[in-house]
Image (cartoon, rainbow, N blue to C red; front, side, top):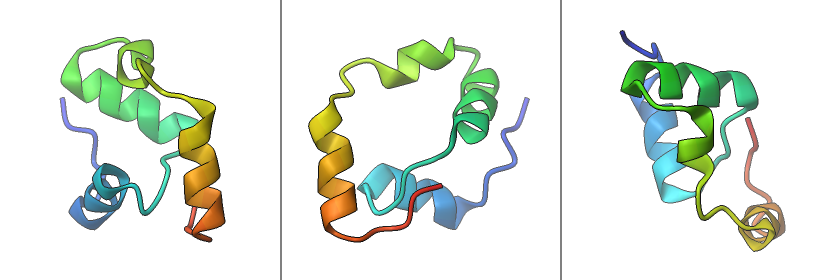
Length: 59
């Protein structure tokens, strides 16, 4: 299964320049055949603050 997520968006998520929305998270988890929660392991609130402080796009 493919997630059909644009490669530039994936690079933005990987580098922390953008945050994916819940729908994208679920599509990615489905494509990787893992539970969405697995992709959230280790996530802490301070990661959200850093993105917001930089004024980066969320989505």
